[in-house]
Image 1 (cartoon, rainbow, N blue to C red):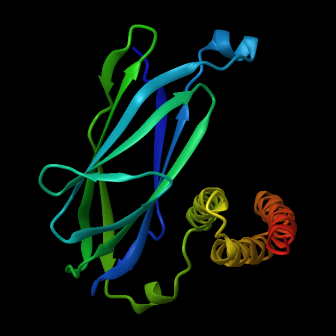
Image 2: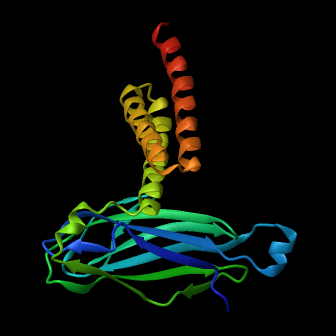
Image 3: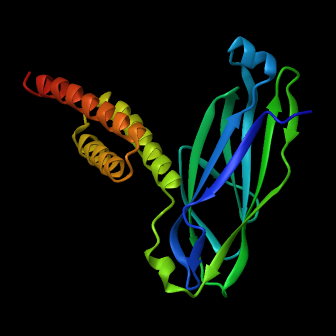
Length: 227
């Protein structure tokens, strides 16, 4: 039986310095697979429910944080990510941040990943093959000046923006959003700078959307504060 989605994994950098590295990002993307019939009808249905991703860490890898989801501590050196459901043709992203300890030059295993989900309509539990991810360690100092992969950087910033928008929505109900406003405005500035550097229009549109929301929220906040 065909899998319900296709995952893709992208490191923020293909090589790291042998002395170790902080803030190494793994972008995880998964896209719902649609049947030929769905493609013809242009319909979307749930292709996977209760998606879980378990990640095992090698001894030299330390998990720092995740963006776009919550992580639970698993057995041994593992974390469990509960990722909900996925529709056909839909695409989702999360980003995991790690610290890599020093290793000799060469290619070293870093993570092992296992997907599990329920496949409609019979809700049968399915697993994707165990996936191994490695990273290359090198003594070449030019890696210290290499930029983060743009695809990873872009979606990491979009995930950060989504999180900040959620925090603003929560704090709005408490009447205490000034600090979140400042964080969100700085994030919008970062999006715009990245868009200017890359020419990516999706980032431009996202930054414009955030600025408009900030302006609207500021007007409401000022009216409330003057009452």
